[in-house]
Amino acid sequence: MLNRFKAAFARRVNDDSIESDSDDQQIALAAAMLLLEVAWADHEIEERELDLIRNSLIALYDISASQVEAVIAEAKLEHQEISSIFPFTRTLNEQLNTQERKRLLENLWRLNAFDGSAFHYEEGVIRKIAELLYLTHTDFINAKLGAKRKLSS
Image (cartoon, rainbow, N blue to C red; front, top):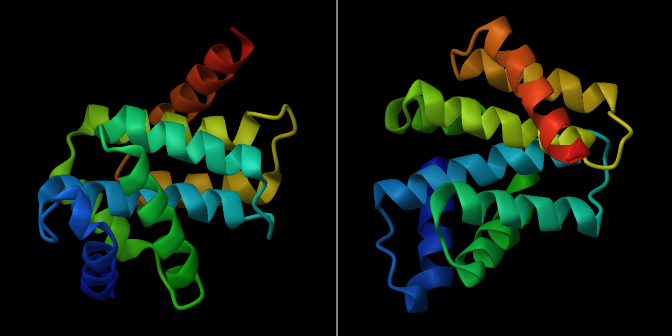
């Protein structure tokens, strides 16, 4: 499924000169799917959530705004067919070190708490993602606290 997603993404961003099999692209695609999975946990995505996802992807993976838009558009289409987030977490485990996975986890928490009303379904999704990223419970809590600190400042 990830290969199908990558191929569709490559068709959309070929003007942005990204190779369809680049590691950076795979990482951004996988991270986008996880961020969107958290946003979808409450069965709706607000524009503010999409803005935070865009900003997170740009900050974490240094990709262009047009590439982010292509990732999000394709992810929305693919979401209907996804039965597991495992392929995306596997890609991230293979490509990112622990510190990079922790940064992504903190961004997942920021998405959960950005409006001041943490949603328990989103927390459950984040917990599952943290486990699949082989992060500890301490990492889970530290990311949550780090996200709250950044949002309050």
